[in-house]
Image (cartoon, rainbow, N blue to C red; front, side, top):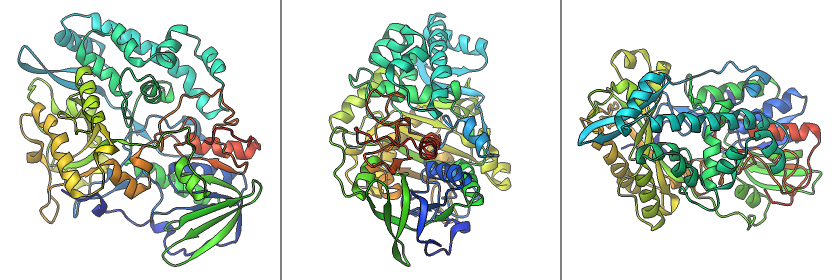
Length: 547
């Protein structure tokens, strides 16, 4: 297996060879060149502000990048983040982006057994086919009818909540009025999601498919009284008013490469390989200290936008993290693969292209998800790790070179749930290999051939597979605890004095513009947009929450 640290990560060619800022002072310094920082840079530079982006890594894009990790093979994988679900059309239009995504023709396939026979639940746009699949698995039309009613409710909420994400942060009562459904509000915002799932559905497999959206990147369970599962679930079902998670054409790096180019064209200055080590501010003026391989220095700024986790910002400011928020803990394992062919499934009635083009749910029945959480909470690697897979190249073949397409190669991404950072005390190949064997075993149980038999090999004869645990993500990307959202997600409202846009901090001229801001998380650009709007509107009300 490839070590994650050895994957090919190309230096950002357009930004190479720039050892220091061209000036000593900027209107805005942005800490971190991930997609949110680039969105903010583009908006602010277009508004006439002088903008400097300082990025620790040797490339922009943060977790939203593409790479060719396997030697000698022209396959461009979305290394970390891999699907687009929350990027508003408003940002695409405002910045004139040509970036596109594509909807997957199948929503999901979930292998199971009925009377000892391998089968599976296939959910897609074809209503008749989906109904027949529900009937075959559950024995009646009841679960399919409940499914339709439930997702009509979530669509109702999405259509009302998503447009608010690029507007000033509403109060709770205001958002409840916007949702305009007491039933939906109570189900999604007030009561543990497990209660609603158990009242709505009776089949263990169907319940699990619903619950998975509440667990992506969060270590929680159906009846968590903190409602972390509800917050995570909302995040995954409101995107662009539909809840669809689409495939980025050209890979995730196509988006961030274009955002970089748009920011540069607008006049922003971007330096890669420049790590910010301290921020000093009196609330009106700021100084940002940085260091690189060649130099170190200080640049003055009227405002600082932090495209880093809130705990990282606190450290840069020389402060202790806000004690009201628990330490961040990622809860996932990401596995990237390149295949010589798609594997055959034990269910020989499903075409592998149908099974892998959408989300392939593995070991994600309701009881399996709860068992995995219980085992992980006790400090043990789940005996049957739940995971989700999909094949990017089935929807967007452009990520493969012509030679690989002709030979039938495909990418495959696996995202394992209920894998908290506490299970992986240190990053490294030994831990990753152990984890890899654990997460692949439930997949192999659903296949007619081991996934290992389908793996491509690179020019050195190594199998084309890489795995990343939360500590690996912390080492590679600086994500505290390997948390893919920088911290646990929040509801898209606030009753606290968090500021007008949900990006403000204790310091009037320091704003969060990363995933740790209110309404952050995922590849959305929303925190970057909101921080830019807060700055341009002058709405920088002091926060009392420390966020």
